Image (cartoon, rainbow, N blue to C red; front, top):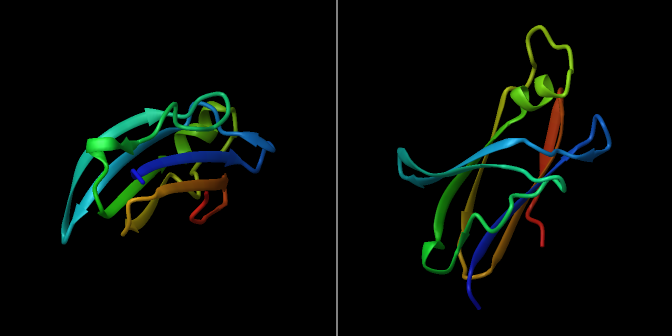
Amino acid sequence: MAGRLTTHVLDTMHGKPAAGLRFDLLMLHGDHSHYLISGLTNDDGRAPGPLLEGDHFHLGGYELIFHVGAYFQSKGVDLETPFLDLVPVRFTMTEMAHYHVPLLVSPYGYSTYRGS
């Protein structure tokens, strides 16, 4: 089975997918990281395609950074100083499988898990 990485963001404040939310993907190497890609979620709150797949999929540590402060500001949420700005999610892929990293987010909290 080939490996792939996907993500999905749900806006729990508004009760709908978080369309237009920016994310960055980095690969971790011990005490440093390197940038891989950035993107915006589509109307369904999903990355438009797999973040990693095929020859670009490698086992190891990764970090997805979700730009939730800018997202809520773009939706007209009036927060003088946002409680959440960037939400980093660090995870490790240890097998050639489908890894799905969903994020449920509001201006004041978030949760994530390994989805399917």
